[in-house]
Amino acid sequence: MSVRRTEEFVVRDATQLYLFEPLQTPVKALDISRLGTFQDCLRAPVHRWFKYPAGFSYRLVETLIDEFRLTQAHWILDPFVGCGTVSVVAKQRGVNSVGLEAHPFVHWVACVKCFWEFDMKRLHRKLVELLACVCFPSAHDLSQQDLTEFPNLLHKCFSEQNLRKLKFLRETIMGFDLLPEERDLFLLALVDTLRTATKAGAGWPYIAPSKYHEKQERDAIEVFRETAEMFYQDLVTIRTNWLKLPVTCDLLLHDARQPYPLDEASIDLAVTSPPYLNNYDYADRTRLELYFLGWARSWRDITEQIRDRLIVAATTQVRRTEFDGEPLSDELKLLAPAIYKELRTKITQLSQIRHSKGGKKSYDLMVAGYFNDIIQVLKQVYRVLKPGSPFVLVLGDSAPYGVHIPTDVYLGEISLGLGFRRYTIQTLRKRGEKWRNNPQRHKVALKEVLLTLWR
Image (cartoon, rainbow, N blue to C red; front, side, top):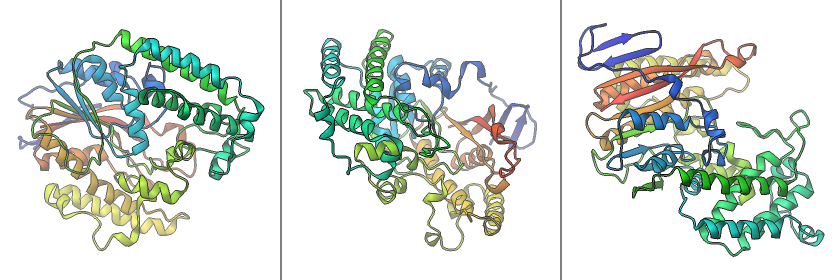
């Protein structure tokens, strides 16, 4: 085995036996200036339709398509497609794509963002008709809105008048003469309205309906009008630059750990950003939207319908009673014995530290569950990748209770055990610096990297 290191780029090759031997096949780092940041998606047409923070720049996908010269004869896979960044770029650039997502609401968002085959004249007419109907509601229309269906969170985030307007908008869209794809488009515009109109501190990742975080509430109908018009203009823009090649854009509601409905060795490039091991509850972070749409009404609903379907990355997903004995899987022990031993030591350390902390958070079992789960994802991606093809992951390391977990190195080593022939690690940026003056936070320097596994 061989490891070749520079300050920002690491290469690990399973075929070599000594440290610092040159690789037979040159491997180069990507130009970081081309890769952008997630902020790019907040400004780009269609990508900005829902401000889900668990993602990466669409420019990375464009760079990879260019780097590997992908065409309509190729296939891209994203096993954690989220709101569809990879799928949107692949469709626009004329490359076949498959995206998997286990979170039903986020999957729906991705599906809406990836449908552009509208009759644009009809869509514009329907937009004008809808706005004419909703922009000047009568007092009677608003007084008819029964708000008892909404959980308490919605009442804390909006004034009664604004919540009535939001429900009026939702019911009008649902009852309007629209095609299914048109209805979904306008519903997503309404959903995207929520965090702009609310008086609560509703930036990601937290919803904070408190006096300390309170901001100026905006009129929901006015925000919806702006958002719906922006959606229409974004469609005009993206359709102008759309190659319109006959390619497939499949978005599957599917658990990335379970067998993929794809042929073996059928994928030319896999690219994703898996959940970071940072105690981020992806189910809870969409609570405002789930409650408003009526997809959930309680923590229990979210747990049963969403949280339990996602790979372990948060302590809220851990039930200590479900772990009996050794939390790490025997499979990890077989694939990467050295990593298994190191992780086992750190998990034991975390299990001891938690008893001295106020929250007693189950970081130990969160870490174990994460690696047990991610092995299943790596196995599935390995099976469907063509020999010689890359699996590119944007991910970060973590340090729960100050115990450093170098996720990139661990996943790279596990991938070699699975049969990947090489991995590279390219540092993209430092993380956590804005919290460095917080006395409650650890002092471990963290980073975000590009981990590439070569089949």
